[in-house]
Image (cartoon, rainbow, N blue to C red):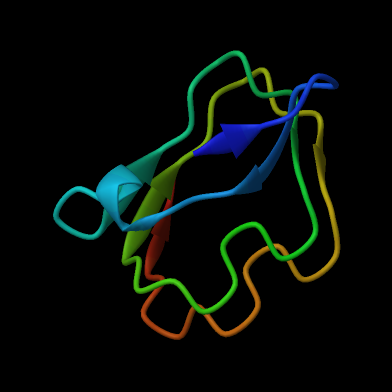
Length: 68
């Protein structure tokens, strides 16, 4: 998982996906553009620290069923 110096989650990789689920750590403040695009995720856990989700962050996540 790559979170930049401005606390924007920019991307994830396959090791960040556990049984189809991604848990975003609370140090992230935003989800960047294309951060999850085309990833095979079924659910995501978003902490209360996230204040912004940029355009296309979940583009082509066709299996995404649950956002907590």
